Image 1 (cartoon, rainbow, N blue to C red):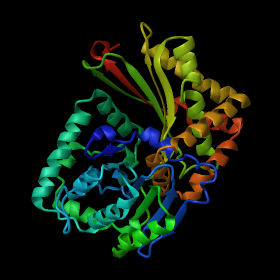
Image 2 (tube, helix red, strand yellow):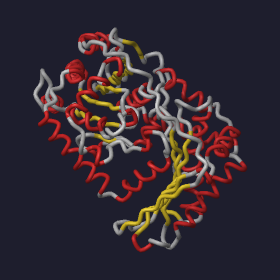
Image 3 (cartoon, rainbow, N blue to C red):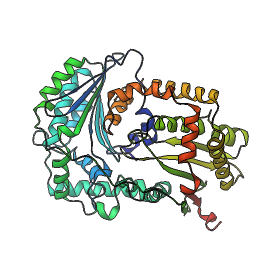
Image 4 (tube, rainbow, N blue to C red):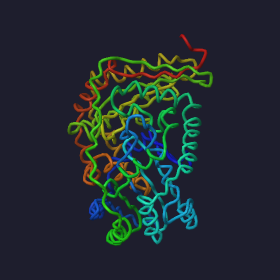
Length: 453
C-alpha cells in the first residue's frame, strides 16, 4: 500500500498506519493541538510535545496513486522520487546533506490517497526544513535527463520489490480482483508497461496540478510553540501562491459485489502456504456512524493480537496455525478492505486453517461477542493507540493521514469516545453484514509442489 522512496525498509506499513492514524490524544493534549489555515489555503496542524528537544515536520499532499490519470499508473510515486532533485535554489542532494549535517533524518512515502514528506530534526532547524520543503513545492527543475534517470530507478524498484517477490505479486493480483471499479485495484508503484512510458510532460502536468499549498497539510509535532510555528510557516510556505482550486476527489464507485473469487499463485520459492480472505467494507470516511469503529473492534477481537480469537483458537489451542490474524484498514478516502489471513503449522493443512478462520467469523456473525470480550478489546485497543503517541512521527501520522483523507483534528481527538460507545450488537451487525463468504476474494500462495492440489 505504501511505498517509500530512498530506503524502502523504512516504508510505513499500511495496516499499522491505518491503526495509528485513528489514535487518541493523550489526556490534556487536546487543548494544545492547534489547527489553522495560511492565506494561500495550506492547512497547518501543530502538536506540541516537549519531552525531548526534537521535532517532526511533515508535508502531506492530498494526491496518491488512486488520483492518477488513466494510463499513467505510478506517476504519484514517481513524482515522490523527483521531489528530491535539484530546484532553482538548491542543487540535487543539498537538502539531504543539510539534514544529515545536523544528525536528522528524512524520507517520504506514497500511498493510494496521499504523498508525504518528512524530516525529524532539532527545533532550531525547523524553519530551515520548512524553507527546503516550500522551495521544492514549486521550484523543481525537471529535465529529460532527470526524468530518464529516476524512471530507471522506479523500474528497478518494481522489479526488486514486486516482480521478484511471490507474496507481492499475489497481493497485486488479489487487489486487482477485489476491486472491480475502484482505482485501488491499481498498484501504488504502477504497472510496468505504463511506468516505462512516464515522461517529462506527464511529470510537469502532475506537479503543476497537485503540488500546491492549497492541496497540502503541514503537520509539526514536537518541542515547539504553536505561535512560533505559525510565524515560520507564514515566512516560508506563506510566500507560495495559491494554486487553482482542485475539483472534488470523486472516483469511480465500487459496484455491489455478488461473487466469491479466488486467486492462486504457486511458486518454487514459497516454502509455507498461506491464504488471505478480503471483503470490501466502508472506511472511516465513508461509513455510517459507528460502523468503522465497530469494524476496528471486530478486527481487534477476531485477530488483533495474541489475545484474539484467531490466535487463541488456531495457534494456542488447536496448534494448527503458525499465524492467524485480521486487520481493518480504516483510513482510506473511499471504501476499504477487511482482511483475515493465516498459515499452517507442522503437518496441518492450509484448508484446515482456512476452515477454522471461517468458523470463527461465522460464529461472531451468528452469536456476536460478549460484553466482557468487547470491553477488554476496547481497553487493549485504546491503550495501544495511546502508547503509539510515544513517538513523534506516529503523532504526526495520526493527524496527517486523517486530514489527508477527509477528516479533521476533531475526528482524531474524539476517536476514543466513539470507540468506547460501540456495542456488542454493532460488532455482530458489521460482521454479519460485511463478512459474507459468498462476496469475498481469497488469495492462495502455494509451494510449487502443491499446484493442482
